[in-house]
Length: 428
Image (cartoon, rainbow, N blue to C red; front, side, top):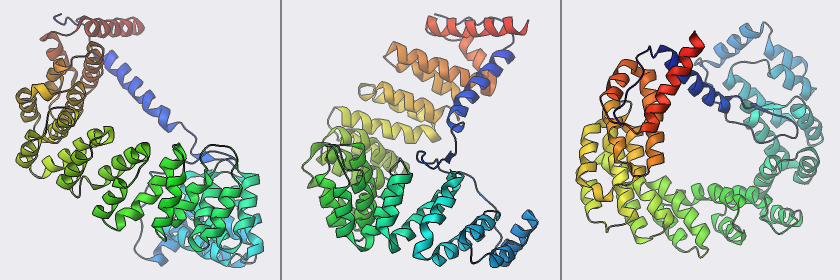
């Protein structure tokens, strides 16, 4: 159907689209950035600070911002850790605060930890203080892990505190930490406390951590434990890590390990990663080979295309093509479009979708023009609608010219017209 958009100003609908996009974005940012004494895991902070090169300058800058001499205040209250903690919270400079926080935690005596932790948690823990909280719990675990775990079991209803304490404990007394984790788990599901134990053992004794991981049933907890172990295995070398994955007998765990290891190694060793994935055909391998070919194409497009051409027909070959197209599309959308023409038999709807995302910012007209390659009518309509709306927000006249000069699915044209009509009615 040849598109016929109502001949009225697009300014109103563009504003509405911007509002809807903004509102959807805000849904993620509206989440509370603090956790209460019994709350869930905190979000990561993305804020940054400009830091001076001198600690003296940082200290004086913090003092100027608060209007008080923070260092002097902490000296006067050095016998009261909670008062020192509250004085420290007034410091704006994150490096200065971290330095003094480490000193404060290090100064605590074993009998002071429980009251100090309770005071720290009393007003909720903002996301930017989660690192301080983890450090505090780890220090407590060094002097009295049983007391720390007893407190966390009673005062918290999420596993973060206990896993953090167990990770610290396992680092120097794994037998005791493992014993506690096993004796304090009930039910038939995965043991959440083993996540902390494995994290603490990962770099100290990866073989033992691996053995504990293999004992866990398929679960979210096992996935978290695997995430904690893999960095330690990769530190020993990519080849050794791949051998470890090859030795796994549990199919689901092996799939998860293949996916994670390939994701970690694709950029460093794209051809080695692709070879390994091809040698270990699986759903995870098929999904991840696009990452390897994407990295390969970023370094040498000819080599990537040569590698792709030797792959047998199937999902892995199609996914490999997707990776190459994504790499080319970011720099040269028209060249990527030509690649899709040359290898249409290996093209999938997902490859077209990702081509659009990678090429739209640089060349929206080429991006939108290729949506017609998609074979699923519903997915095609969604892509047209979303992409054209974004284009209108960016350059409404160019988008309108393209829409009125091309044939689009009737549902897409109807939706655009309905949006325009609604916004025209609201403005009257």
